[in-house]
Length: 136
Image (cartoon, rainbow, N blue to C red; front, side, top):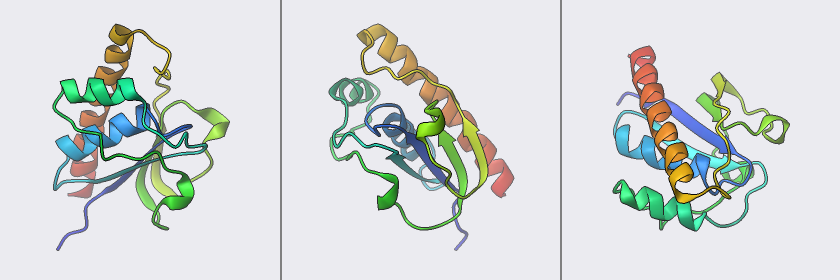
């Protein structure tokens, strides 16, 4: 069986952006990529607005948990994607790393939060396409 490309999404709290990215990657990359998310300083809970707005897109995040980097499998990732957390996100061994510089939506209006959600989805779809192509 062929190994799936691995993707790790990292933000500070692992409550909004990285969780949404993981949700989209699991939806759009099912059977094509393996996705995780974590935070450098996890909040311990998923943002309620993120959960509600992902539900609008048919993605159930009620089973997601905010987790730290120390709770991840020890491995070299194919892709590590940071969400714009700068120095707060420590080095994780990977083949490729990108910083998407996505603003933290936790204090945004619902409409602005939706724009961030939609941006995350667009970027995740693009990443999945690239990961599949490179891994072929």
